[in-house]
Structure formats: structure tokens, C-alpha cells
View 1 (spheres, rainbow, N blue to C red):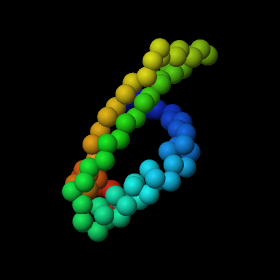
View 2 (view 1 turned 90 degrees about the vertical axis):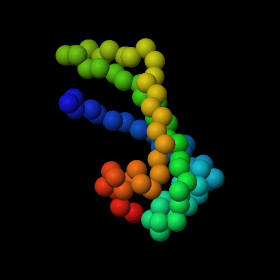
View 3 (view 1 turned 120 degrees about the vertical axis):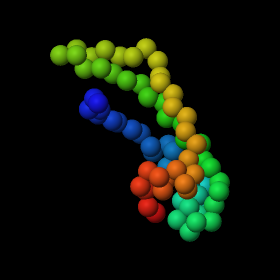
View 4 (view 1 turned 30 degrees about the horizontal axis):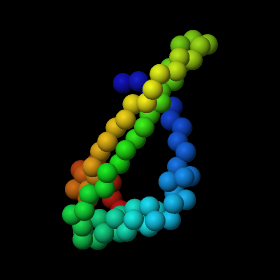
Length: 80
């Protein structure tokens, strides 16, 4: 295990009304047990390693794609 400092800019995601409404509707349906719908999450990570007083930037992005449904959230212990 390695401690990780995370910075995220979710403003553009949350300011898109259509995307935000779809996410909120999905979460409400999951909470009510009314959905088998899945959503696809994509995380793009650009790591920077701190080695002493120097920072080493990773040359590209690491992309993680994950499909999420109500069962996945429940297995992760996420209760809505």
C-alpha cells in the first residue's frame, strides 16, 4: 500500500446539467431498488511521483474504466 494524495476537478462534470440529472436519477433508482441499469465510470489519472525534493511526472494518463450498478455499490458498503 502506498499513501496517495488526490486532486480532482469535478466542476465540469457537475456543471453539466444533463449528466448530473442522469447520475442523480440513477442513484435514486438504486436507493429505491428499482434499477438494473449500469453506468460506466472512466477515471483518467496523471501521476506525479515525489522523490525527495523532486517531482517526476508520468508521461501520460492511466485510464480506469468501471461499470457500476446497484449491486456493486452494495458490495462496496455504499448505502444511499
